[in-house]
Amino acid sequence: MGSNELNFEGWVCPMPLRDYPNIILGHGGGGKLSAELVEHLFLPAFRNEQLEGLGDAAVFNINGSRLAMSTDSFVVRPLFFPGGNIGELAVNGTVNDIAMSGATPLYLSAGFIIEEGLPLATLGAIVDSMAAAAQKAGVRLITGDTKVVDKGHGDGVYINTSGVGVIPEGVHIGPHRAQPGDVVILSGTIGDHGMAVMSVREGLAFETTIESDTAALNHLVAAMLAVTNDIHVLRDPTRGGVASTLNEIAQSSQVGIVLDERKLPVKTAVRSACELLGMDPLFVANEGKLLAIVPAAAAEAVLAAMQAHPLGQEAAVIGQVVSQHPGMLVAKTGIGATRVVAMQIGEQLPRIC
Image 1 (cartoon, one colour):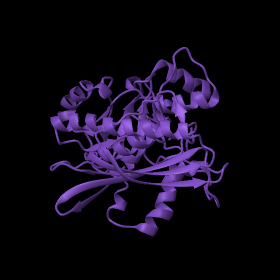
Image 2: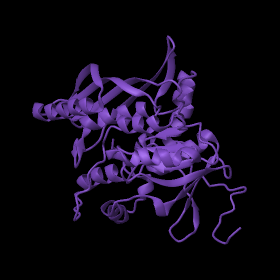
Image 3: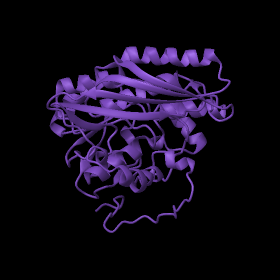
Image 4: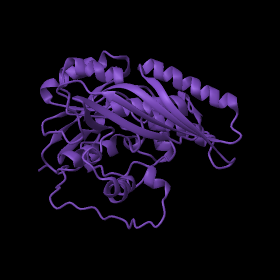
């Protein structure tokens, strides 16, 4: 073993005490606290075969058809940010969760919790952007609900969206299907959304405006599946970023994942913002990128299909799946060293989706 290689045999990480009597922001951040909340509270209460998959969408059968269903709630602050707003984020986020199962998204619902005093013009702009995003993604919003809460209790508006789609025959995608020898592909630059929201929230100014990458990825997934059905895992690295998502996949599939940090596409402005704020782009949220884990034999064709699509032009192979250190994500750094990339306790940036 070279001097820069880590010995993972018997590797342990001291864990801080997380016996919280009350909910904190970190419970909604997509890290270890979120996972514990699901594992120890929600899953035991509602346990069933579909829920236990813990994917971005639940997969189930009705009359011989395989369907995917997902729900998500959006509490981003501020409501409008460079490159998007809470409305299109709500549509794109649920469309993407459905698409990550390989399904074709078809229908959405929307629930609005509106704070008293929100200008109707603001709500109208949000709704218009939702309609445009749904049309672009090729889905219909067919049902919804509206509630109003007292002034000072809603931050303007919160939105919940749910969706359903149909999984094509022969497509079997899930976080438990990664296998040693598979290749990890990323569809583009990371950290754009989180830094776009944070720059507005903190009043940061850069030479180049950082814009959110919010986008519906279902058409990109369709282009990938047109090349091959043999895609093992698809995930969109939202809360917790690329690092948290790959950790979840490694744990679900009980494989090791080796990431090459030198191959990670990160925009200069995003990297500078992360350095200024002391953040790691690997843990910053994305809303228009996906991770694909595919067999090595299919990787070249899948990568070419992604790069031919407008949302995948900067796609790159960033790592591989290995049999060593199961359940762990390891990164090779720019200086040739190796480090363990553990899932964070909470979230670097709360309220970003």
